[in-house]
Image 1 (cartoon, rainbow, N blue to C red):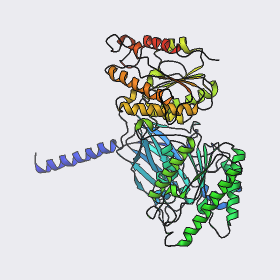
Image 2: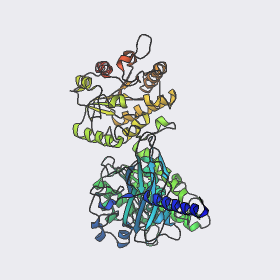
Image 3: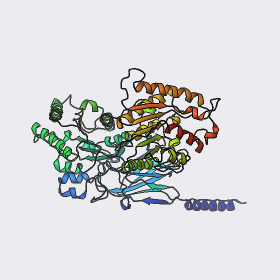
Image 4: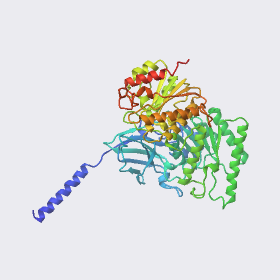
Length: 607
Protein backbone atom coordinates (compact mmCIF):
# COMPACT_ATOMS: atom_id res chain seq x y z
CA UNK A 1 0.00 0.00 0.00
CA UNK A 2 1.53 3.34 -1.10
CA UNK A 3 1.53 6.49 0.96
CA UNK A 4 -1.37 8.11 -0.94
CA UNK A 5 -3.58 5.03 -0.55
CA UNK A 6 -2.76 4.81 3.16
CA UNK A 7 -3.77 8.45 3.60
CA UNK A 8 -7.09 7.83 1.87
CA UNK A 9 -7.77 4.79 4.05
CA UNK A 10 -7.09 6.84 7.18
CA UNK A 11 -9.41 9.62 6.02
CA UNK A 12 -12.17 7.12 5.27
CA UNK A 13 -11.70 5.44 8.67
CA UNK A 14 -11.94 8.80 10.43
CA UNK A 15 -15.10 9.61 8.44
CA UNK A 16 -16.76 6.34 9.35
CA UNK A 17 -15.72 6.59 13.03
CA UNK A 18 -17.34 10.03 13.23
CA UNK A 19 -20.39 8.60 11.45
CA UNK A 20 -20.63 5.80 14.03
CA UNK A 21 -20.24 8.28 16.90
CA UNK A 22 -23.03 10.39 15.42
CA UNK A 23 -25.21 7.30 15.11
CA UNK A 24 -24.53 6.38 18.75
CA UNK A 25 -25.39 9.83 20.07
CA UNK A 26 -27.79 9.55 22.99
CA UNK A 27 -31.42 10.42 22.63
CA UNK A 28 -33.39 11.65 25.62
CA UNK A 29 -36.95 11.58 26.93
CA UNK A 30 -38.22 14.52 28.96
CA UNK A 31 -40.63 15.10 31.83
CA UNK A 32 -42.33 18.46 32.31
CA UNK A 33 -43.88 18.41 35.82
CA UNK A 34 -46.16 21.35 35.01
CA UNK A 35 -47.91 19.27 32.35
CA UNK A 36 -48.31 16.20 34.55
CA UNK A 37 -51.86 15.20 35.44
CA UNK A 38 -50.73 14.15 38.94
CA UNK A 39 -49.73 16.37 41.84
CA UNK A 40 -45.95 16.01 41.58
CA UNK A 41 -44.63 19.25 43.12
CA UNK A 42 -43.63 18.44 46.69
CA UNK A 43 -43.33 21.04 49.45
CA UNK A 44 -46.57 22.94 48.84
CA UNK A 45 -49.36 23.30 51.36
CA UNK A 46 -52.20 23.03 48.86
CA UNK A 47 -52.88 20.46 46.15
CA UNK A 48 -54.29 22.90 43.60
CA UNK A 49 -55.48 26.44 43.00
CA UNK A 50 -52.16 28.03 42.03
CA UNK A 51 -51.75 30.87 39.56
CA UNK A 52 -48.42 29.56 38.30
CA UNK A 53 -46.98 26.07 38.39
CA UNK A 54 -44.31 26.70 41.03
CA UNK A 55 -45.98 29.24 43.35
CA UNK A 56 -46.05 28.71 47.10
CA UNK A 57 -49.40 30.38 47.88
CA UNK A 58 -52.74 29.79 46.16
CA UNK A 59 -53.93 32.30 43.55
CA UNK A 60 -56.57 33.69 45.93
CA UNK A 61 -53.78 35.07 48.14
CA UNK A 62 -52.69 37.58 45.49
CA UNK A 63 -55.48 39.99 46.47
CA UNK A 64 -55.30 39.30 50.20
CA UNK A 65 -51.62 39.61 51.15
CA UNK A 66 -49.30 42.55 50.58
CA UNK A 67 -47.83 42.81 47.09
CA UNK A 68 -44.16 42.31 48.12
CA UNK A 69 -45.10 39.14 49.96
CA UNK A 70 -47.13 37.82 47.02
CA UNK A 71 -44.19 38.33 44.66
CA UNK A 72 -41.92 36.43 47.04
CA UNK A 73 -44.46 33.60 47.16
CA UNK A 74 -43.78 33.13 43.44
CA UNK A 75 -40.22 32.06 44.34
CA UNK A 76 -39.95 28.28 44.46
CA UNK A 77 -38.13 28.02 47.81
CA UNK A 78 -38.66 24.61 49.39
CA UNK A 79 -40.41 23.09 46.40
CA UNK A 80 -38.97 19.85 45.10
CA UNK A 81 -39.57 17.04 42.64
CA UNK A 82 -39.14 13.33 43.31
CA UNK A 83 -38.55 10.57 40.81
CA UNK A 84 -36.95 7.15 40.29
CA UNK A 85 -34.58 6.24 37.48
CA UNK A 86 -31.66 3.99 36.61
CA UNK A 87 -30.19 6.66 34.32
CA UNK A 88 -26.45 7.32 34.45
CA UNK A 89 -27.08 10.81 33.12
CA UNK A 90 -29.78 13.26 34.21
CA UNK A 91 -30.29 16.65 32.56
CA UNK A 92 -32.38 19.45 34.07
CA UNK A 93 -33.20 22.52 31.97
CA UNK A 94 -35.33 25.44 33.09
CA UNK A 95 -35.92 29.18 32.85
CA UNK A 96 -36.50 31.74 35.59
CA UNK A 97 -38.02 35.20 35.61
CA UNK A 98 -35.70 37.14 37.93
CA UNK A 99 -32.05 38.07 38.35
CA UNK A 100 -29.77 35.06 38.48
CA UNK A 101 -27.82 36.07 41.59
CA UNK A 102 -27.55 38.62 44.38
CA UNK A 103 -24.53 40.46 45.81
CA UNK A 104 -24.46 38.26 48.92
CA UNK A 105 -25.86 35.02 47.45
CA UNK A 106 -24.57 33.03 44.44
CA UNK A 107 -26.55 32.02 41.40
CA UNK A 108 -26.42 28.37 42.48
CA UNK A 109 -28.56 29.27 45.51
CA UNK A 110 -30.72 32.02 44.03
CA UNK A 111 -31.52 30.32 40.72
CA UNK A 112 -29.99 26.84 40.79
CA UNK A 113 -31.34 23.37 41.46
CA UNK A 114 -29.93 20.68 43.73
CA UNK A 115 -30.12 16.90 43.35
CA UNK A 116 -30.04 14.32 46.17
CA UNK A 117 -30.50 10.55 46.06
CA UNK A 118 -31.51 8.06 48.74
CA UNK A 119 -29.66 4.77 48.92
CA UNK A 120 -31.08 1.36 49.88
CA UNK A 121 -30.44 1.97 53.58
CA UNK A 122 -32.16 5.36 53.67
CA UNK A 123 -29.01 7.53 53.57
CA UNK A 124 -29.09 10.77 51.57
CA UNK A 125 -26.30 11.24 49.03
CA UNK A 126 -25.55 14.40 47.03
CA UNK A 127 -25.13 14.54 43.25
CA UNK A 128 -22.71 17.07 41.76
CA UNK A 129 -23.86 18.60 38.47
CA UNK A 130 -22.23 20.59 35.69
CA UNK A 131 -24.23 23.80 35.42
CA UNK A 132 -24.52 26.68 32.97
CA UNK A 133 -26.50 29.87 33.61
CA UNK A 134 -28.06 31.79 30.75
CA UNK A 135 -31.48 32.48 29.30
CA UNK A 136 -31.97 28.75 29.81
CA UNK A 137 -30.26 27.25 32.85
CA UNK A 138 -28.98 23.68 32.55
CA UNK A 139 -27.65 21.15 35.02
CA UNK A 140 -26.05 17.93 33.79
CA UNK A 141 -25.44 15.08 36.20
CA UNK A 142 -22.99 12.78 34.42
CA UNK A 143 -21.56 9.32 35.16
CA UNK A 144 -23.80 8.79 38.16
CA UNK A 145 -24.45 5.28 39.47
CA UNK A 146 -27.82 4.40 38.00
CA UNK A 147 -28.24 1.19 39.97
CA UNK A 148 -27.96 0.60 43.71
CA UNK A 149 -26.55 -2.90 44.17
CA UNK A 150 -29.24 -5.32 43.00
CA UNK A 151 -31.96 -2.66 42.82
CA UNK A 152 -32.51 -1.14 39.39
CA UNK A 153 -33.85 2.33 40.20
CA UNK A 154 -32.54 4.98 42.53
CA UNK A 155 -34.83 7.50 44.23
CA UNK A 156 -34.03 11.20 43.64
CA UNK A 157 -35.14 14.52 45.11
CA UNK A 158 -34.59 17.69 43.08
CA UNK A 159 -34.80 21.00 44.99
CA UNK A 160 -35.90 24.07 43.02
CA UNK A 161 -34.44 27.63 43.22
CA UNK A 162 -34.66 29.50 46.51
CA UNK A 163 -34.99 33.10 45.29
CA UNK A 164 -36.33 32.90 41.77
CA UNK A 165 -39.55 32.00 39.99
CA UNK A 166 -39.43 28.97 37.71
CA UNK A 167 -41.24 29.61 34.42
CA UNK A 168 -40.53 26.30 32.71
CA UNK A 169 -38.64 23.14 33.67
CA UNK A 170 -37.88 19.72 32.20
CA UNK A 171 -36.04 16.70 33.53
CA UNK A 172 -34.49 14.47 30.85
CA UNK A 173 -32.89 11.02 30.93
CA UNK A 174 -31.64 8.76 28.11
CA UNK A 175 -34.45 7.09 26.21
CA UNK A 176 -33.20 3.66 27.25
CA UNK A 177 -33.35 4.52 30.98
CA UNK A 178 -36.28 3.82 33.25
CA UNK A 179 -38.09 6.82 34.74
CA UNK A 180 -41.07 7.19 37.07
CA UNK A 181 -42.23 10.28 38.93
CA UNK A 182 -43.25 10.11 42.60
CA UNK A 183 -46.50 11.99 43.26
CA UNK A 184 -47.22 13.79 46.52
CA UNK A 185 -48.58 11.29 49.07
CA UNK A 186 -50.98 11.92 51.92
CA UNK A 187 -48.86 9.94 54.36
CA UNK A 188 -47.19 12.47 56.63
CA UNK A 189 -48.59 15.82 57.68
CA UNK A 190 -46.04 18.56 56.86
CA UNK A 191 -44.07 20.85 59.10
CA UNK A 192 -45.11 24.37 58.09
CA UNK A 193 -42.50 27.11 58.46
CA UNK A 194 -43.55 30.79 58.42
CA UNK A 195 -40.59 33.10 58.55
CA UNK A 196 -38.16 35.54 57.00
CA UNK A 197 -35.39 35.52 54.39
CA UNK A 198 -33.48 33.08 56.59
CA UNK A 199 -36.32 30.57 56.34
CA UNK A 200 -36.67 31.24 52.61
CA UNK A 201 -33.03 30.23 52.20
CA UNK A 202 -30.75 33.28 52.28
CA UNK A 203 -27.81 32.80 51.92
CA UNK A 204 -27.41 29.10 51.17
CA UNK A 205 -25.10 28.30 48.28
CA UNK A 206 -27.44 25.53 47.06
CA UNK A 207 -31.22 24.95 47.51
CA UNK A 208 -30.56 21.69 49.35
CA UNK A 209 -28.55 23.61 51.96
CA UNK A 210 -31.39 25.87 53.09
CA UNK A 211 -32.10 24.88 56.67
CA UNK A 212 -35.66 23.79 55.85
CA UNK A 213 -34.28 21.44 53.17
CA UNK A 214 -31.65 19.99 55.49
CA UNK A 215 -34.25 19.56 58.23
CA UNK A 216 -36.64 17.80 55.86
CA UNK A 217 -33.94 15.24 55.08
CA UNK A 218 -32.96 14.83 58.73
CA UNK A 219 -36.53 14.27 59.88
CA UNK A 220 -37.70 12.51 56.70
CA UNK A 221 -40.81 14.65 56.78
CA UNK A 222 -42.43 16.99 54.25
CA UNK A 223 -41.68 20.67 54.79
CA UNK A 224 -43.70 23.66 53.61
CA UNK A 225 -41.41 26.68 53.28
CA UNK A 226 -43.37 29.92 53.72
CA UNK A 227 -40.36 32.12 54.35
CA UNK A 228 -40.73 35.58 52.81
CA UNK A 229 -37.64 37.75 52.62
CA UNK A 230 -38.15 40.84 54.79
CA UNK A 231 -41.84 40.05 55.12
CA UNK A 232 -42.30 37.47 57.87
CA UNK A 233 -44.31 39.61 60.28
CA UNK A 234 -46.95 37.43 61.97
CA UNK A 235 -49.58 38.86 59.62
CA UNK A 236 -53.15 37.65 60.06
CA UNK A 237 -53.67 37.39 56.29
CA UNK A 238 -50.74 34.99 55.94
CA UNK A 239 -51.69 33.04 59.05
CA UNK A 240 -55.16 32.56 57.61
CA UNK A 241 -53.59 30.65 54.73
CA UNK A 242 -51.15 28.78 56.95
CA UNK A 243 -53.97 27.43 59.10
CA UNK A 244 -55.60 25.98 55.99
CA UNK A 245 -52.76 23.44 55.99
CA UNK A 246 -53.29 20.36 58.18
CA UNK A 247 -49.84 20.47 59.72
CA UNK A 248 -47.90 18.23 62.07
CA UNK A 249 -46.21 21.34 63.51
CA UNK A 250 -46.26 25.10 62.89
CA UNK A 251 -42.93 26.92 63.11
CA UNK A 252 -43.07 30.73 63.55
CA UNK A 253 -39.61 32.19 62.91
CA UNK A 254 -40.39 35.87 62.25
CA UNK A 255 -38.41 37.86 64.82
CA UNK A 256 -35.63 39.02 62.43
CA UNK A 257 -38.32 41.00 60.57
CA UNK A 258 -39.85 42.47 63.75
CA UNK A 259 -37.06 44.89 64.66
CA UNK A 260 -38.25 48.33 63.58
CA UNK A 261 -38.85 51.79 65.03
CA UNK A 262 -42.46 51.40 63.92
CA UNK A 263 -42.88 48.23 66.01
CA UNK A 264 -42.99 48.73 69.76
CA UNK A 265 -42.44 45.90 72.20
CA UNK A 266 -46.15 45.91 72.98
CA UNK A 267 -46.98 45.71 69.27
CA UNK A 268 -44.64 42.75 68.75
CA UNK A 269 -45.98 40.96 71.81
CA UNK A 270 -49.55 41.39 70.62
CA UNK A 271 -48.67 40.14 67.13
CA UNK A 272 -47.15 36.99 68.64
CA UNK A 273 -50.12 36.38 70.95
CA UNK A 274 -52.61 36.98 68.13
CA UNK A 275 -50.73 34.57 65.86
CA UNK A 276 -50.88 31.82 68.47
CA UNK A 277 -54.58 32.44 69.07
CA UNK A 278 -55.35 32.42 65.35
CA UNK A 279 -53.58 29.11 64.79
CA UNK A 280 -55.03 27.41 67.83
CA UNK A 281 -58.56 28.52 66.97
CA UNK A 282 -58.33 26.73 63.62
CA UNK A 283 -55.92 23.94 64.58
CA UNK A 284 -56.32 23.12 68.28
CA UNK A 285 -53.82 20.62 69.64
CA UNK A 286 -51.22 21.13 66.92
CA UNK A 287 -47.90 22.21 68.48
CA UNK A 288 -46.47 25.65 67.70
CA UNK A 289 -42.73 26.28 67.84
CA UNK A 290 -41.68 29.93 68.17
CA UNK A 291 -38.08 30.84 67.42
CA UNK A 292 -35.89 33.52 68.93
CA UNK A 293 -33.84 35.92 66.84
CA UNK A 294 -30.51 34.19 66.17
CA UNK A 295 -28.49 37.37 66.67
CA UNK A 296 -25.96 39.37 64.64
CA UNK A 297 -22.39 38.26 64.04
CA UNK A 298 -21.08 41.80 64.60
CA UNK A 299 -22.86 42.22 67.94
CA UNK A 300 -19.64 42.59 69.96
CA UNK A 301 -18.54 45.49 67.77
CA UNK A 302 -22.01 47.08 67.59
CA UNK A 303 -23.65 46.87 71.04
CA UNK A 304 -26.83 48.45 69.67
CA UNK A 305 -27.42 45.42 67.47
CA UNK A 306 -26.99 43.12 70.44
CA UNK A 307 -29.50 45.11 72.46
CA UNK A 308 -32.01 44.92 69.58
CA UNK A 309 -32.16 41.14 69.42
CA UNK A 310 -31.91 40.69 73.20
CA UNK A 311 -34.91 42.98 73.64
CA UNK A 312 -37.09 41.29 71.06
CA UNK A 313 -36.14 37.83 72.30
CA UNK A 314 -37.21 38.86 75.78
CA UNK A 315 -40.54 40.02 74.34
CA UNK A 316 -41.02 36.57 72.80
CA UNK A 317 -40.13 34.76 76.03
CA UNK A 318 -42.42 36.99 78.11
CA UNK A 319 -45.28 36.51 75.66
CA UNK A 320 -44.94 32.72 75.57
CA UNK A 321 -44.68 32.65 79.37
CA UNK A 322 -47.84 34.76 79.72
CA UNK A 323 -49.75 32.61 77.25
CA UNK A 324 -48.68 29.43 79.05
CA UNK A 325 -49.75 30.80 82.42
CA UNK A 326 -53.08 31.79 80.88
CA UNK A 327 -53.69 28.17 79.90
CA UNK A 328 -52.38 28.01 76.35
CA UNK A 329 -50.87 24.61 75.63
CA UNK A 330 -48.68 23.09 72.92
CA UNK A 331 -46.32 26.09 72.82
CA UNK A 332 -42.57 25.59 72.48
CA UNK A 333 -39.57 27.88 72.21
CA UNK A 334 -36.32 27.51 70.24
CA UNK A 335 -33.64 29.71 71.78
CA UNK A 336 -30.83 31.71 70.20
CA UNK A 337 -28.40 29.71 72.31
CA UNK A 338 -29.67 26.43 70.87
CA UNK A 339 -29.18 27.72 67.30
CA UNK A 340 -25.61 28.64 68.15
CA UNK A 341 -24.58 31.12 65.46
CA UNK A 342 -21.18 32.84 65.67
CA UNK A 343 -18.87 35.04 63.60
CA UNK A 344 -18.09 32.16 61.22
CA UNK A 345 -21.69 31.25 60.40
CA UNK A 346 -23.08 34.36 58.68
CA UNK A 347 -22.53 36.08 55.34
CA UNK A 348 -23.42 39.68 56.16
CA UNK A 349 -23.94 39.74 59.90
CA UNK A 350 -27.53 38.46 59.65
CA UNK A 351 -28.03 35.82 56.94
CA UNK A 352 -26.52 32.38 57.57
CA UNK A 353 -23.93 30.86 55.31
CA UNK A 354 -23.95 27.08 54.84
CA UNK A 355 -22.47 26.60 58.31
CA UNK A 356 -25.20 28.76 59.78
CA UNK A 357 -27.88 26.86 57.88
CA UNK A 358 -26.60 23.61 59.35
CA UNK A 359 -26.65 25.18 62.83
CA UNK A 360 -30.30 26.06 62.32
CA UNK A 361 -31.17 22.60 61.00
CA UNK A 362 -29.48 20.76 63.87
CA UNK A 363 -31.15 22.96 66.49
CA UNK A 364 -34.56 22.48 64.91
CA UNK A 365 -33.99 18.74 64.56
CA UNK A 366 -33.23 18.31 68.25
CA UNK A 367 -36.15 20.48 69.37
CA UNK A 368 -38.71 18.95 67.03
CA UNK A 369 -37.74 15.41 68.01
CA UNK A 370 -38.34 16.44 71.62
CA UNK A 371 -41.76 17.83 70.70
CA UNK A 372 -42.70 14.70 68.76
CA UNK A 373 -41.21 12.44 71.47
CA UNK A 374 -39.03 10.72 68.91
CA UNK A 375 -36.08 9.47 70.89
CA UNK A 376 -33.02 8.03 69.22
CA UNK A 377 -29.62 6.79 70.27
CA UNK A 378 -26.11 6.68 68.89
CA UNK A 379 -25.99 3.23 67.28
CA UNK A 380 -27.73 2.41 63.99
CA UNK A 381 -30.47 0.29 65.59
CA UNK A 382 -31.69 3.34 67.51
CA UNK A 383 -31.69 5.85 64.63
CA UNK A 384 -34.97 5.77 62.63
CA UNK A 385 -34.50 5.49 58.88
CA UNK A 386 -36.26 4.22 55.75
CA UNK A 387 -34.97 1.51 53.39
CA UNK A 388 -35.43 0.10 49.87
CA UNK A 389 -33.46 -3.16 50.15
CA UNK A 390 -36.33 -5.27 48.80
CA UNK A 391 -37.36 -2.82 46.09
CA UNK A 392 -37.24 -5.49 43.40
CA UNK A 393 -40.18 -7.18 45.18
CA UNK A 394 -42.26 -4.30 46.58
CA UNK A 395 -42.18 -0.53 47.08
CA UNK A 396 -41.46 0.31 50.74
CA UNK A 397 -43.00 3.78 50.73
CA UNK A 398 -46.14 2.58 48.96
CA UNK A 399 -46.62 -0.15 51.55
CA UNK A 400 -46.22 2.42 54.33
CA UNK A 401 -49.02 4.46 52.76
CA UNK A 402 -51.15 1.31 52.38
CA UNK A 403 -50.72 0.57 56.08
CA UNK A 404 -51.83 4.09 57.00
CA UNK A 405 -54.90 3.80 54.77
CA UNK A 406 -55.76 0.35 56.13
CA UNK A 407 -55.57 1.33 59.80
CA UNK A 408 -57.72 4.39 59.14
CA UNK A 409 -60.42 2.44 57.33
CA UNK A 410 -60.41 -0.86 59.28
CA UNK A 411 -59.35 0.14 62.83
CA UNK A 412 -57.55 -3.21 63.39
CA UNK A 413 -57.50 -4.85 66.81
CA UNK A 414 -54.53 -7.17 66.27
CA UNK A 415 -51.27 -5.81 64.82
CA UNK A 416 -48.29 -7.79 63.55
CA UNK A 417 -45.08 -5.78 63.07
CA UNK A 418 -41.97 -7.22 61.49
CA UNK A 419 -39.82 -7.94 58.45
CA UNK A 420 -40.24 -10.34 55.52
CA UNK A 421 -41.07 -13.25 57.83
CA UNK A 422 -44.21 -11.34 58.81
CA UNK A 423 -44.71 -9.59 55.48
CA UNK A 424 -44.97 -12.79 53.45
CA UNK A 425 -47.09 -14.70 55.93
CA UNK A 426 -50.53 -13.50 54.82
CA UNK A 427 -53.29 -11.00 55.63
CA UNK A 428 -53.70 -7.35 54.70
CA UNK A 429 -52.35 -5.15 53.22
CA UNK A 430 -51.75 -7.88 50.67
CA UNK A 431 -48.15 -8.80 49.82
CA UNK A 432 -46.71 -9.77 46.40
CA UNK A 433 -46.80 -13.37 47.62
CA UNK A 434 -47.88 -15.20 50.77
CA UNK A 435 -46.22 -18.40 52.01
CA UNK A 436 -48.51 -19.02 54.97
CA UNK A 437 -51.88 -17.52 54.02
CA UNK A 438 -53.82 -20.62 55.11
CA UNK A 439 -52.43 -20.52 58.66
CA UNK A 440 -52.90 -16.73 58.80
CA UNK A 441 -56.54 -17.13 57.85
CA UNK A 442 -56.98 -20.05 60.25
CA UNK A 443 -55.55 -18.33 63.31
CA UNK A 444 -56.08 -14.60 62.70
CA UNK A 445 -58.68 -14.34 59.94
CA UNK A 446 -61.48 -13.40 62.35
CA UNK A 447 -59.37 -11.18 64.61
CA UNK A 448 -59.42 -7.94 62.54
CA UNK A 449 -55.67 -8.25 62.09
CA UNK A 450 -53.23 -6.14 60.06
CA UNK A 451 -49.89 -7.26 58.67
CA UNK A 452 -47.29 -4.53 59.18
CA UNK A 453 -44.41 -6.67 57.97
CA UNK A 454 -41.97 -5.05 55.53
CA UNK A 455 -39.47 -7.21 53.65
CA UNK A 456 -35.83 -6.57 54.67
CA UNK A 457 -36.78 -4.28 57.57
CA UNK A 458 -34.42 -3.86 60.46
CA UNK A 459 -35.15 -2.52 63.95
CA UNK A 460 -34.37 1.06 62.91
CA UNK A 461 -36.79 0.85 59.97
CA UNK A 462 -39.64 -0.22 62.26
CA UNK A 463 -38.71 2.63 64.59
CA UNK A 464 -39.14 5.04 61.64
CA UNK A 465 -42.53 3.55 60.84
CA UNK A 466 -43.72 3.88 64.44
CA UNK A 467 -42.59 7.51 64.50
CA UNK A 468 -44.32 8.17 61.18
CA UNK A 469 -47.85 7.21 62.02
CA UNK A 470 -48.31 3.46 61.62
CA UNK A 471 -49.62 3.14 65.19
CA UNK A 472 -51.62 6.38 65.15
CA UNK A 473 -55.36 6.92 64.76
CA UNK A 474 -56.69 3.57 66.01
CA UNK A 475 -56.80 1.47 69.18
CA UNK A 476 -55.40 -2.04 68.81
CA UNK A 477 -55.86 -4.48 71.65
CA UNK A 478 -52.79 -6.59 70.89
CA UNK A 479 -49.48 -6.00 69.09
CA UNK A 480 -47.04 -8.73 68.06
CA UNK A 481 -43.50 -7.52 67.33
CA UNK A 482 -40.96 -9.79 65.62
CA UNK A 483 -37.89 -7.94 64.33
CA UNK A 484 -34.10 -8.15 64.45
CA UNK A 485 -32.97 -10.97 62.20
CA UNK A 486 -31.82 -8.55 59.47
CA UNK A 487 -29.63 -6.77 62.03
CA UNK A 488 -27.64 -9.90 62.83
CA UNK A 489 -25.06 -9.46 60.07
CA UNK A 490 -24.33 -5.79 60.70
CA UNK A 491 -24.92 -5.23 64.44
CA UNK A 492 -23.61 -6.62 67.69
CA UNK A 493 -25.95 -8.35 70.11
CA UNK A 494 -25.76 -5.36 72.44
CA UNK A 495 -26.77 -3.00 69.62
CA UNK A 496 -29.75 -5.22 68.79
CA UNK A 497 -30.85 -5.22 72.43
CA UNK A 498 -30.51 -1.43 72.61
CA UNK A 499 -32.61 -1.02 69.50
CA UNK A 500 -35.37 -3.35 70.72
CA UNK A 501 -35.57 -1.60 74.09
CA UNK A 502 -36.01 1.78 72.41
CA UNK A 503 -38.52 0.37 69.91
CA UNK A 504 -40.62 -1.22 72.65
CA UNK A 505 -40.67 2.10 74.49
CA UNK A 506 -41.72 3.93 71.31
CA UNK A 507 -44.59 1.46 70.78
CA UNK A 508 -45.71 2.03 74.36
CA UNK A 509 -45.73 5.79 73.83
CA UNK A 510 -48.03 5.33 70.84
CA UNK A 511 -50.28 2.57 72.23
CA UNK A 512 -49.99 2.42 76.03
CA UNK A 513 -53.24 0.46 76.45
CA UNK A 514 -52.40 -2.32 73.99
CA UNK A 515 -50.95 -5.67 75.03
CA UNK A 516 -47.52 -6.13 73.46
CA UNK A 517 -45.93 -9.49 72.69
CA UNK A 518 -42.26 -9.30 71.70
CA UNK A 519 -41.36 -12.49 69.85
CA UNK A 520 -37.76 -13.61 69.98
CA UNK A 521 -35.73 -13.78 66.78
CA UNK A 522 -36.51 -17.04 64.99
CA UNK A 523 -33.65 -19.51 64.50
CA UNK A 524 -31.83 -19.33 61.17
CA UNK A 525 -29.37 -21.68 59.56
CA UNK A 526 -25.83 -21.30 60.86
CA UNK A 527 -26.80 -18.83 63.60
CA UNK A 528 -28.77 -21.06 65.96
CA UNK A 529 -26.40 -20.75 68.94
CA UNK A 530 -25.97 -16.98 68.64
CA UNK A 531 -29.73 -16.39 68.32
CA UNK A 532 -30.52 -18.62 71.31
CA UNK A 533 -28.07 -16.63 73.45
CA UNK A 534 -29.29 -13.32 72.08
CA UNK A 535 -32.94 -14.14 72.80
CA UNK A 536 -32.05 -14.78 76.44
CA UNK A 537 -30.40 -11.34 76.56
CA UNK A 538 -33.43 -9.74 74.90
CA UNK A 539 -35.77 -11.43 77.37
CA UNK A 540 -33.71 -10.29 80.33
CA UNK A 541 -33.33 -6.72 79.04
CA UNK A 542 -37.00 -6.28 78.18
CA UNK A 543 -38.11 -7.87 81.45
CA UNK A 544 -35.99 -5.27 83.20
CA UNK A 545 -37.60 -2.53 81.10
CA UNK A 546 -41.03 -3.79 82.07
CA UNK A 547 -40.12 -3.42 85.72
CA UNK A 548 -40.11 -7.17 86.38
CA UNK A 549 -36.40 -7.53 86.95
CA UNK A 550 -35.49 -4.53 89.08
CA UNK A 551 -35.48 -0.75 89.09
CA UNK A 552 -35.07 1.06 85.78
CA UNK A 553 -35.09 4.67 84.69
CA UNK A 554 -38.34 4.37 82.75
CA UNK A 555 -40.26 1.11 83.27
CA UNK A 556 -42.91 0.11 80.75
CA UNK A 557 -46.50 0.72 81.81
CA UNK A 558 -48.20 -1.33 79.10
CA UNK A 559 -49.09 -5.02 79.32
CA UNK A 560 -45.91 -6.60 77.93
CA UNK A 561 -44.37 -10.04 77.60
CA UNK A 562 -41.46 -11.61 75.76
CA UNK A 563 -41.88 -15.07 74.21
CA UNK A 564 -39.39 -17.26 72.38
CA UNK A 565 -40.65 -19.64 69.69
CA UNK A 566 -37.17 -20.99 68.98
CA UNK A 567 -37.87 -24.49 70.32
CA UNK A 568 -40.67 -24.90 67.77
CA UNK A 569 -38.18 -24.64 64.90
CA UNK A 570 -35.21 -26.61 66.28
CA UNK A 571 -34.40 -30.30 66.08
CA UNK A 572 -32.91 -32.28 68.99
CA UNK A 573 -29.41 -31.22 67.88
CA UNK A 574 -30.47 -27.56 68.35
CA UNK A 575 -30.20 -26.91 64.63
CA UNK A 576 -33.07 -25.64 62.54
CA UNK A 577 -35.61 -28.20 61.38
CA UNK A 578 -35.18 -27.59 57.67
CA UNK A 579 -38.58 -29.13 56.92
CA UNK A 580 -40.10 -25.94 58.41
CA UNK A 581 -38.12 -23.47 56.29
CA UNK A 582 -37.97 -22.51 52.63
CA UNK A 583 -34.40 -21.19 52.75
CA UNK A 584 -33.05 -21.60 56.26
CA UNK A 585 -34.54 -18.26 57.30
CA UNK A 586 -38.15 -17.91 56.13
CA UNK A 587 -40.74 -20.45 57.32
CA UNK A 588 -42.62 -22.45 54.73
CA UNK A 589 -46.35 -23.21 55.02
CA UNK A 590 -45.75 -25.85 57.69
CA UNK A 591 -43.45 -23.51 59.62
CA UNK A 592 -46.06 -20.75 59.55
CA UNK A 593 -48.67 -23.25 60.75
CA UNK A 594 -46.54 -24.08 63.79
CA UNK A 595 -45.78 -20.40 64.45
CA UNK A 596 -49.46 -19.52 64.21
CA UNK A 597 -50.40 -22.24 66.68
CA UNK A 598 -47.65 -21.10 69.04
CA UNK A 599 -48.82 -17.48 68.95
CA UNK A 600 -52.57 -17.95 69.07
CA UNK A 601 -52.25 -19.68 72.44
CA UNK A 602 -50.52 -16.56 73.73
CA UNK A 603 -52.99 -14.11 72.21
CA UNK A 604 -56.25 -14.77 74.03
CA UNK A 605 -59.37 -13.32 72.45
CA UNK A 606 -60.38 -9.96 73.93
CA UNK A 607 -63.53 -7.93 73.63
